[in-house]
Image (cartoon, rainbow, N blue to C red; front, side, top):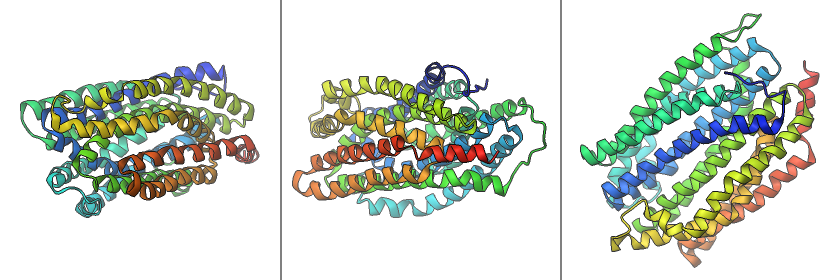
Length: 452
């Protein structure tokens, strides 16, 4: 099913569209969290730390996939909203072929630089081998990861957020079951966690591609379309490349932060690994709802409807606030219990790691409102291809977070690292909101109207 979001109540459309996407990311994050829980409880704290120290590096590759997803989603949404179905199909197939090639290149690159990255991060010796093994297996599945991300983005661009949810539920449940089987039953250790993700992700990507091709074939187009176009690739890249750079720079920033954390030993690494998974759960849920806002905005930008874009922002911001509130409450009231899920809280050896993770949540969770505002405003900037403003605000967040982590950690220890997050969030959220209210994004919408 596809949805034309240029008609009807913006709030009802966004809610109907966002809920399946939200459930999708909840299932996705639950199986990511399950990886760490199973590693920490069925292997040991060092295994949790090994998976955790790998996380910022995997996020670099995920950032590329996410940025490519954003590029194709915005362009395809605009063509779909403008009813230019031939161009839309060219954009779909150009995106698919391009991302498969990109996946192959990054797989080769990732396998080559993996050991170097682990050393640059000052990875503790007692977890180095497991972390490297986990990453190598993960990198072999990059093409599947990118392909699935692109398929999800295209489904979203066509107004279909239900199909990706079905895939994610099946993949997530299967992944958790395989995690448990490989680790608890077959005693494969950290490699079992990685292989479970590889297998489930691969199957899900292939099935998603087949369903997508069927759905696209059902959309009638009067004109012929190209299976690949360099001009279309250039159009997609104009949005995707800034998004990839933005996402990648954020991931690189997280690598710098991880490097600082690693200097404080495996308790800090394990505590951070648990807490940052919970934080990522929250931010991913907010980001996903904002992706639905971005798709709404992109379709209406293609239709030249500025009024509906503003209505969509207001409705979307309210939905994001409702989604954010439960996380804020839980993380402030029950941080130690939540961090304790990731490792055996009865063991005295784990007490320090749990304490460190608890401190992280207590410091960052009260500022989730700033994240909600920033990502909602960013959704309008992305949906209207106002990438310069979007990148400036995001890079400000990144630079300040890394800078203050380096400045504060010598004086406050790991607590100083956690303190740097709210600083970046608050300043970047103000910048993004100012970019939204000044209305410069309207020029891009007006240019779309004039170019028709």
